[in-house]
Image 1 (cartoon, rainbow, N blue to C red):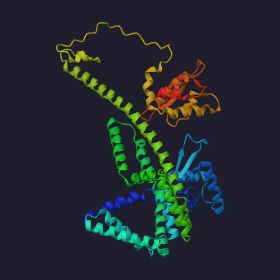
Image 2: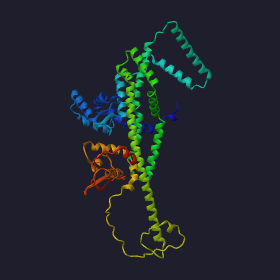
Image 3: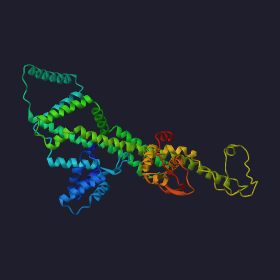
Image 4: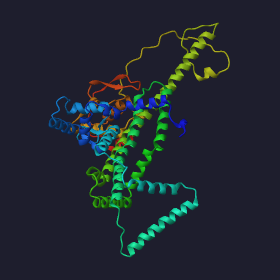
Length: 487
């Protein structure tokens, strides 16, 4: 073996340290690892999803049955698991209950799979495994070989074996199957099917990890935004070329093909019926393979929706940040021009800020600066007309109007809702949310009273801001047509 291909001692140490900090290793090394894995496997295995109240009741019931008194209650245990990166607690607006939905992370599922294999003492080194290895290697060698003679020899060998099998069937004879080898091969296939059910969620985990990085970095500069945007495209390109993406799309295509699905279901039924000695856990995986895979793919679909919303907010915020960046560059250029003029006009130094216009900068000749009227300008007076929100129309493209409509209509389930009540339902309201909801509230029946209210929102720099708006209320649901027009 070429030693140059092996990682150096420092590289191996860094790689293992990163693995040591992973959620999977933390679950292995936890003091109560056996209890945690038992509860997780009992209620959240194979992509199961539970509402937070339901999971809390189940955990507390099991803790009481086991007589464990040194553990927190069910809800605190769920929060601990979520903090350690073992459980996702996701709030789904589409859920009728409005509760958090809990399900295991990919790292926790890998720990459960490993513990299950240790309990069963899984092994692929069986009596029939060498035959399967030899047949598989022969098939792969025929696919990659460039020797026409070897390829022809393998094809002729397969044809002769099939002809002999057909001749036996025509003569009414049936070769006695080697049940030992068949059972060993079926068990190895069941191991692979069980691993597939867990690994297919890796595609969604990679998606979630890519888009989560967009939320962690603050919008501090235009350069930082460009770096995050470049990293997003690089990560997506790596994801599309990964084995997780290939397997996910391959399974999607197979599940949507009724012919392939029907054939695979029939083969699974035949194997489980003819080989009754397969371990019950593996038999359950084979019998429920399509159901388990469909659940995992459904979770990946929900993860893709969340990631799409994150990317949309990231792009919308970046568009505004780029515009502000251009404004900052213009202001810096004007300030530099003022300083240059004050230092270069040695014969007539002035201390006033000069509002340079394009004709003045590009004209050829002498520049003269005269103060014709020394009277201070009149003070500005407060505006008396109503707010004109038409100039903020572009902000509607920076929010998810469909999601915002669902929030308003959900708030109206218990009766009329004020503008501040609707904003309170948003996790992080920005100015775009305030303006869009304000414009929608103005179209509701009735007029606003003389009162006003202070609305707080978050700026792109991460600081809290406040704005005074009329005390408006929503009394009717937002129709879909209005949302389409706003979008």
